[in-house]
Image (cartoon, rainbow, N blue to C red; front, side, top):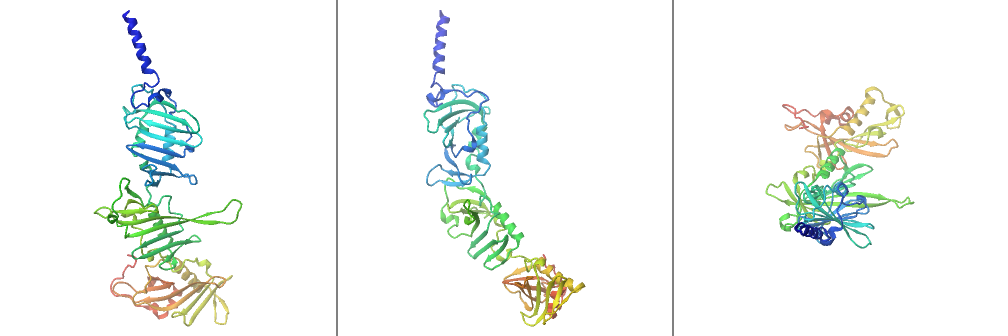
Length: 490
């Protein structure tokens, strides 16, 4: 009889423990007993590519992740949907990787009825338009590398919510807490890259520098107009591409007076030209994508970290000052080293004159038979041997030899001695080069100076080719400096 009473009592107890709603505190009430997820089955079935929004609440903070319809890029709103929330582009691989992991997470154990989510579970809400919203609740505490999960699924436009529970590997718990979605941000100061930039604008207290690309060639546009050195531009673009955010100021922004952003050190703008054409139309429109960083004052006593405002949002972050080492404000740092950017094969005529364009010294023209000298009457005489080589050597020097120094002011002691004019095969003007020298001194040897437009380029005089020396005349015979020669390339 006693055993019969015990059996009845245990049966009644089991009924109350296993009935719907008996999952315990934090378990979600009656919903939690809709079912257990079979071991080995995925905890939630969905296609990651269809998710348009993710809400993640973890560690006492809520963040909203949304996918841009046009680009497919994922954006993060720190602080949820509040009007003051800051928006950030996320690393292109992080959200797809997270969704793929979530979609493949299997149940590895049955959820005990006594397991609880706790007072502050982490919550992942994924929204799939036209299909469903899934809310995945992760237990506040895990044990032995595992943790409780509770999945609530609500069909879009339908009624009712299904709730299932399971035990899973605690890797998913860790992902949403450490580092969490704020750690998935694209840390680039210029997200999306800069290598396809059409213009680079650097504004500072000393003036503006504008670099622009035309027909796949870079030019200095302001404060002077001249071709740019492609290698130096590549270094600049690489530096800007690598400029990283070292710290985000999510919780609070410092006082404006402390950041130095009211009177910034520099403002760097990258402009991209995006060409598009409507379907079936030959007309192309160009939209300009503009991204900007504003460099403020030091964020620490070392000065190695700088306050920086990003773009139109004005969000303030901290960047490493070392990343700006290659971002010079001097226009001459970007000027092409050779005197001309045209290839020798594109040059059809070469004219030499004395002084700054006075007496004609010689005129040469490319013909089917090779370079020819053209006299004042227009008669052509084909050159041969060293005379023909002298023209080719001069053009190779002008287009390929990099200057030892580039300035926008005439070097001390400079005097113009000759003018070389270059034309295309059809006779169209190309470059006009004013040539002169500077005398030797104790600091450097005599230098050849070539002025093209607003830029003066200096070269060792002894590197000048024969044609240039002949055009310079007596100026090419400048005496060498006394003492040991100076290495101008140091």
